[in-house]
Image (tube, rainbow, N blue to C red; front, side, top):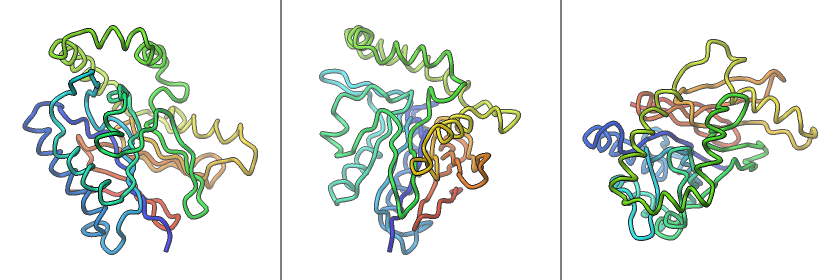
Length: 257
């Protein structure tokens, strides 16, 4: 029996308010446990890995002695599952990129700051949040360079958490609205463009068979111009409640209720 891997992204815990966030969080915890136990939508096939593909938190920043409140149920479930031996990968998104070791040390996840390429049952996959990739997101790429600079991070950590988090949440709301804008044509979808160009630049044996990204808040399942490589977007849990399952080398987009 091969791998059974589940991918989800863009939970945005904390948005738009505490009540709605907690309701969404409880639903997501049920999804995580069903995947791990092989029950519900994952009946009979317990996960061999889980990938949280970015923006699990609407804002995340690890201060020296504090973290943003909220997300307790998800963090507890993650710790419970990793303690039980399930590998969980946390792909930093544009809303939760400011990690400095807390998630690894306390929750036991593997944190990835950029897309990773791995092989599951003969299927070569690239997995990442997707922010800043492709020809789109030009303004954000410049902003990301600022956000990830040691100087900017140091300055932000000097702000009192109450002020820093309030400013960050105001930016987060604007960012969510921009990210979820649908493209008129497939050719305009910048992560589709990125996947196509990335494969074109690789040697034949290095090309990916499957690209899995989040960030766009749009569940997508597209075939690249070569006719067989696929790009799947995990969608989000603010509106769509979708995920991607990769079972025995076969990937599919799942819709949850």
